[in-house]
Structure formats: structure tokens, C-alpha cells
Image 1 (spheres, helix red, strand yellow):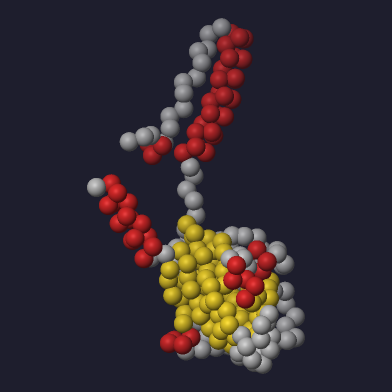
Image 2: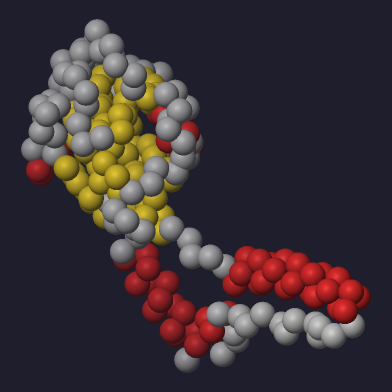
Length: 215
């Protein structure tokens, strides 16, 4: 019975692990309106976005990381281009849209990376993008504007996976450690006072949160 339950939970988790954010082949071009880009909200797991673009076809979009989640990874799930070794541009700014129209003369600070088939090995692009200007990873709740652009006139097609992870709750082990440190300080102070007046008894053990107790 337990095995069946574990298998059911695993299958259910796998079925919701991937979500399609945008598929240009069915939903149309993402567009290049930097003041009003398509806006999508991430869910926990892998959020997939597929797009085709070239040097003059700039694809812009905004991702919202909701409260309770963080964006901790961007991965290349697929990438095709007529030229072997080609690379494409992926830029990001914090906010609901880019601070100016995308162009080769973009002057505002923007985090970016050049990616291609080399990134199909599972490389996480997010730390590269956020290294300058320094934003820090993971990306916490908020809006983030992205810019996809090809570096040649030939079109590239890619599927990007944006991994959103739940913000971890404080672990019982961590709470136990904090409680132990607090208890140690209290006992130390108590013993010191006891040695001074011989009247104070040691402090009792701290009470653990109910969810830390084994069922």
C-alpha cells in the first residue's frame, strides 16, 4: 500500500513539474514592444518558453516570480540554428519592462549571456546573467524583463526552462540548533547567577514547535 502511494505521489508530481509558459508556434510571436511585453507568472517546477527569433526580430517578455517562490535556474532545453557553434543573446533587467527600447546601442545596464547548443549540457544561465550588474541569485518575488535576440540574420529556435522553487521553510534541525544555543546561553547565565546568590535554579528546556515532534 505504501509503495502504491509513493508511486502515485511521484507520478502526480511529475505531471505538474513542467508548465508551458509560451509556445510561439501556437500562441504567436512574443513581440518587441518593450513598454508592454507579454507577462507570465511562474509556477513551481520547470516553466517552458519556446521562441524563434533573428537579428531584427527581438522577443521580449516579463516573468513574475510570485510570493513563496524563487527563480533559481534558467536552462536551454533545445536550440537550433543553421550555423554550428552559433550563439544567441538573452538579457534581463529587474522590473516589469526594459528601461529603453532594445537595440544594438542599448546603453542602460543589463545582465546578459550569449548561449547556444553548448548550453544543452545543463548549464544554469542564471548566475551568468546576474553576475553583472550584480543582482544575486536566486531571484526573489518580483518582476523581471527578458530580451531574446539572435546575433545573425538567420533565425534561431530555442526552448528555455525557467526553474521556480518553493522558498524553503525553516527546518526542524535549524530550529533545534537555535533552541540549543538559546538554552546554552540561558543555562550559562543561570549558573552564573546561581554561583552568586545560591538561590536560582537552572532554566527549563525550551519548548519545540509542534511540527518538529515526530508523529
